[in-house]
Length: 351
Image 1 (cartoon, rainbow, N blue to C red):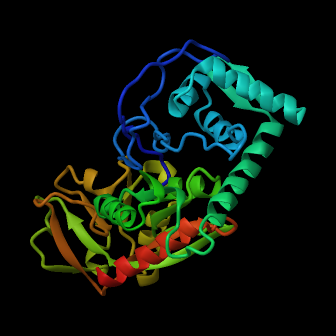
Image 2: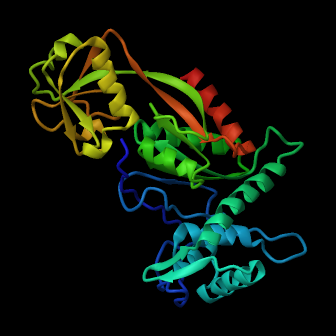
Image 3: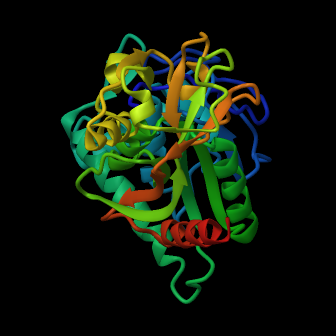
């Protein structure tokens, strides 16, 4: 289900924005103070799915000036000096000077001005990839001798399916590993995988993923599929349904035309294909099945995703399932990522 949802930013506390620089605008983006908590969540309702406030800031080298890498990464992520300065709790002119100094040191232009802020040059994109690897390695190195106590940043994505459970899991992980600075984002599984592959997220919990190269997957658990029907559907009073019962019946697929290749919809199609059944698939524009069951003839095959109590849940015979998995980049398995994957596996066994 690849369409990107709209999500809400978490505002921690408000503060002042500085004057414009590098094409930025004063007052744009969330701002905060040093009293920000180290665990935040972003839910899937408003704005952009993965541009959450970062409390990471920039960490100083001992006996020297601050490392430029975290600062540059924030600028690259925001694409706007004003928003980046707000995240870093510094003024826009000071941040602009840091970026110019970094370009002078490297002898290469990293940013170009555009109407809405800044964009990366080819050299900037190369530095972004290397800076993320360097920071991940540095944070991982701090765990030597303390393998059970990871630290550093963990940007985690959770699928919109059962996302409240995964928010709770993230909070439990943070309570156990308080030295890990967490950000939690909710989006569709295909979106989350792309953000993990691109380095914007460290790990994600995804549902029935289309596996991508360069990513590592850890199986969490299998979730049973059920038939979900509008209470006015002619089949809603049946205790159980087989795929044969759904021959010729309208079955909703979610995400519209853009969702045709999602792992979720592929699993549903293949389920019917394997049984030789041909329902009437209809592509609903909704991102999740629970939002698509509005009319009396609406029916979906899905895992539990927070359907209202009034929706009829019918047992699917024979039983079938989809899998939840933890995914991270194969070349970026930090101590925090490894600890979370193990923690999630223990949670799944106990669920």
